[in-house]
Length: 620
Image (cartoon, rainbow, N blue to C red):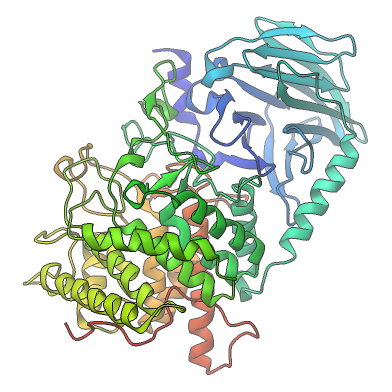
């Protein structure tokens, strides 16, 4: 057993915080080590990959030489991280941020003496190509330490002398109260001139100003405003400013089951997130971000409708070839580490409904209609009309045999239902889509309801349950008080809820082609809270929402899943889908509380996933 393998179980996903510049991001541990950093984009190759291996795979640590108590926080309304170390000799802060508005991505680390004197140690290990390539390191005449390998160059500039040892860059120093030292790591292309240095204090002030200014544009979420704002800042931090795309997470291969193989690359943009994300931004008042995401969506799906994918790269790239990294052992020994995502080639019918619903949400929120978007939508609606009866791989991208998943069929209904409600279409077209929506609705109600339990099932003819069934009320497939939905929620509470949190589905290898076992899915747990609100079970909805908010780590971040037994995060981090669900649940709870009080509601009416108009086929 290597020392790397022995150390891995000591780390926890919740020990990390994210800094970013809307181009890429880095994860900073409580121990002062930056263990994950990809260049030049979120989905680029990592030069710090210790998160999925060990220090020898790349990291940058600045921390006291001895034991320390650690507290940390984001400076108000920003992605500027302040980690405070309290030792026997004194107190020191390490302030980490990625400057906004610079031509090149940089990580700035500012060490500030707060009290007494603290002995510090800096260790920088650069390894390109996901932790394997050792760069050529040299010292420039201006004092910068540069590292070059292939197309990339990183330059480290600091206010203290740096030395090399054992293919590492090191510094040891003592800092006293009132003193400060700064270190800046800047990325550039190896064939271009070295990026120019910048003033750290000015960059910090401008970065804090940017984030505070952006966050101040958010709406009021009542008592949950602060936690909603942190989630929205996280979503903004995961957005790729050049295109408007939003990465599902900053990481790849953080395990959904410790020691298992449920490890996937989430640094791409999922169509499935579309309507939820639009809803979150629009309810919070961030119309520019909603418009940018909507426009990215329409560009990504443009083309032949039979080639629509479930996910794309940050600029809409379609080639997301999956491969495994043999030299990285994985987080806590969870292998394989995967780059790319083969699920991009799956047929998942639900994404058509997500795109249609996203456009409907945008219209109801007042976003202008994109002319070419109407033609693109008509094209893939015709394609969906031809293929909606096919089995698919479902919302959870199972790698077992395709099935007639209930959620997939419901989202086909959503696509046709929203088409029937769209403006600027002829009466003939409207009636055509309305009839097709009713046909799909009727088939689902005939084939997806358990004859004994009276509740919906994961797939036609199946006895399994699936948390995606919680979306049926949210998208307006049936009224929330429909007996079938009431029984579905009750069955999920009985069979999928563990310690108050919701599992995605009843897993086995036959279903998804993978070994059994994973944590509770946080977005699904928020969906249960939403259902409670829709069903009038407001106290239960509030209690569950409060419980979920309490799972955020010390800086307000969520992963994809949570293990209620080991009480730790699982899955990629920070997870956009979890934070989107938190934002939408907060506004759903606020709407439900307003309705109970008979209030007129907020000055700006919140947007919902559907308009609660007459449903097609409700009597089926």
